[in-house]
View 1 (cartoon, rainbow, N blue to C red):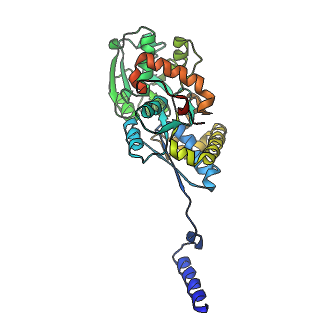
View 2 (view 1 turned 180 degrees about the vertical axis):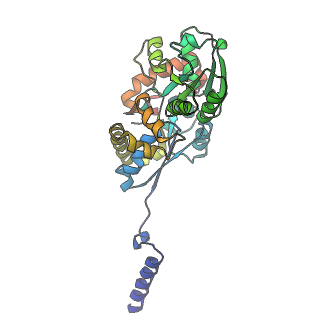
View 3 (view 1 turned 120 degrees about the horizontal axis):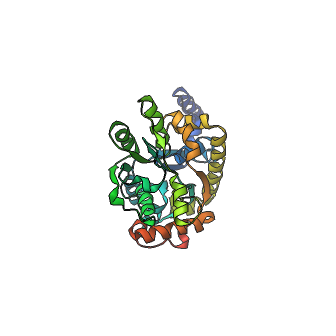
Length: 324
């Protein structure tokens, strides 16, 4: 018994020498990994991961995907369990047989149009050269659905697609394009970058406001939020509730401390701190459970179905898609 005790104490001394804690003998925290979009709501997720209460229970981390195709691949492979997603992509994945459901909405309209000369209404896009990242995804979908509703022929707009928002910003500032659709914070980043290059970049008409007027709804586009693997959610419902509270606290803190929030956000997005600060008023951020915004989501999905059913995988989501 004496030898066993001496051996145990020797083991503890050895771990201390290596800079390791005896606490490592206990079980490590379970991982709670969120895969965020390269857009401003990921700043709120990042703040929650750093400051939230869930981090006391689990190893909370945020990683960002580069494109919706990478998001889809991560879900299909089973690697992604909790992820920020365009709101139509979650429905599409579910209708394709993936076991995912919606947790919340994190923005009610994050798409901005910036241009080198003022574009005051959707009709003024006719004849313009416009850049859009992510062909056939949310930015592209919203603009084309709006144009169709307003009976504006999209063929009269010269649209060029890019693989990512940073690529769109680079082309917009360095080539002869008139305007670009961008999520925040990249819209703000393009304005600030333009100033350093001697290019006057301005915000054009409010796309979210134009959507509400065209479709006779409130000025909001429930554009993106968190979806989750259903089995993982069912195994961690208490943790998801705590994470919801962390996100609410993170959003309130960011609004009151934009500079400090941007210092955290710069770790997750390809935009400088000033752009992150400037983008906050234009991102329509929210933390709203999916069931609390279900009516607005279904109205949005119904418009997408009328525009192109393939965007949702051919049908509206079932009630059990809305997890909380």
